[in-house]
Image 1 (cartoon, helix red, strand yellow):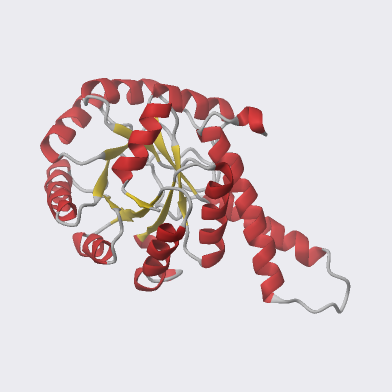
Image 2: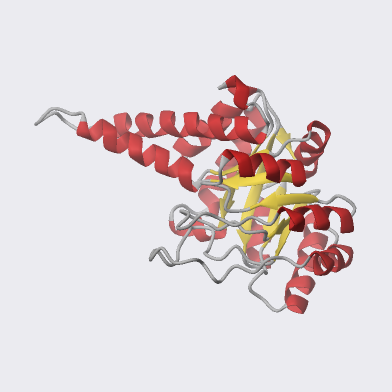
Length: 291
């Protein structure tokens, strides 16, 4: 069933858990995520980012995501992740996405604030929820950036006092605050500052905190993040990697001269992504004991 971000965040708050938010830039990923959520009977967020436009266009995958959410047996929020322009946000809203994120984190504070205000006003016309970002997780959502193994010095930890002022000025429903995570593959062990999460929650009246760069975080740090107040965790890179590894394993297992069928590759990748998503969702919902 189709749900807003507010609705799934309310569920997360009541249960004291985090909801998984997974990128679905293709049918295999979409079926893997919704299938995992239905098996675990947990709400879920499916999302596509503007930087994924080179993989598949929003105009093609967006209506499929909305349709799949409506048919799902659990609440599913359809979310635009890291929308970089207001025009792109409007495109998602016209497709009936139930939540959009405006990412002005690389802009000067005042410009980010003004654009976020406009994004909130626009989304309200469609009955959609809004996420915004203050601080920086470093590399783009796609994970593009340095692979040398050096610490990512482009991250900017969010100032809780500034976060409070930002929320009061912009409204909205959830915020991605930077507290030490990074998009893409982790090159070094992340140094997470859970006090940022706790202080932001205290100063903003308990607004939903979003963890970006959730793939690769340790189980213990997931637990601490949720305890501190994280209610939405974005997760894609390691899910995508699990699918790729399964395909590689399948190909390596073929006998010499045996034909390769794309449908078999697709099924292997989808199955592995589904299992990886289930594992992640259990961690976010404190169901590790089920594993």
